[in-house]
Length: 148
Image (cartoon, rainbow, N blue to C red):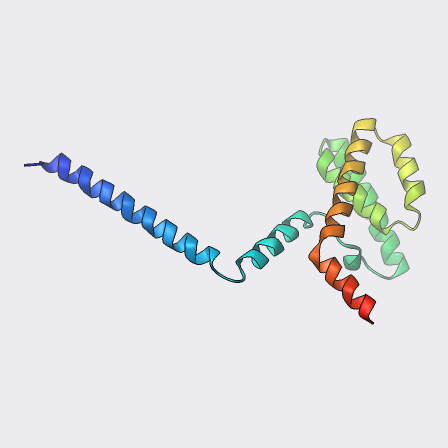
């Protein structure tokens, strides 16, 4: 006879196998969903652009744009001063996106920011620009505007 511990081990093994079968079955169901890949790409794009606001979410009134610009500059400077360099760089990038003369702003930032922080900002800006170019939403918008 197997005994109590032997029975317990067999039940534990069977329960583990049933659980693994359950996981495999529902993973297959999830992956076979036709919208799975589309939803996955949408979620990834939303996460990657969540920290940087798009220019369409910026106010269109000139005074509102100026207030937004100044707020982003002050938030960026404050966060960098307090040690949150990543957050500060994000706000400075937002300010550059709405600036009417981004070249001059970049020159000022290059002269005032430490080299490491300025380099990090340029790398992030380049990454956002590359991601924007490869974004399917922008490609669709460009295709529709070309048809008009």
